[in-house]
Image (tube, rainbow, N blue to C red):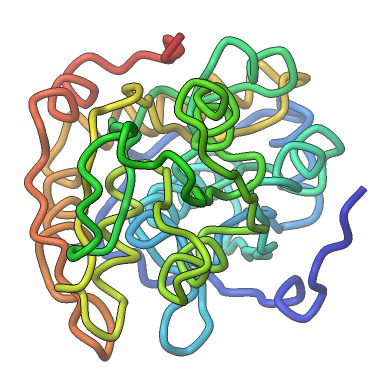
Length: 304
């Protein structure tokens, strides 16, 4: 199993300042029907996974703290758990994960919930469970604006990078023989972008929202453009163990409650339409009709 960075694993943050309310749930009786909720009640702590470079969903902010749209949704779940369990306070333990080690971390119970833009797929459902979709994106590629690359036909003889274990990974492997490019696999999205930025790769295949976030953080965002056809539509969700269906039901109910109110619009505007961090990164992305539909009709149906 891949090793984890322990320096960030001991970070605790009391949930005393959530900006938006979560529907109050009645305290449990003697024991919960959910092993995860039982553990949270006994320890007073919830363990959440996050990414360090998946802006705006899940990333380390200017102070190295977990932040993002999916992170805020997980904090809603944590606060809902505190209320349901009748706890005076709850602590959050954050564990940084990569696209590669997130699955063993969830399966082995190292995290109670993974707060990231995980793509819900039938293949992945064999290992883990997914919440209802919190966002919808498409897989495309990021290239240099002056590269002349507009389609996969333009990639012949060139190098294409993606993050190992990501959704982009399967597309890059699947199309390699057809389009005759070289493929490389980075450990995470930040490293993938570095290979593109340094010229060691000519295209980076990933979810378009993540590509927009990485482009916005570049020294000169105008040097990069999102190009090519949509390879697939991705249902982005929180991820958790399959061993606790009651916990999944609780997470789904909390998200559905958030989607039904004004809170989701506030989160969308904050993370997708307003400046983020000291660099004032603004993705300027409005929610698509697919995203709005995912909020209006919560579903955990896989992309394929």
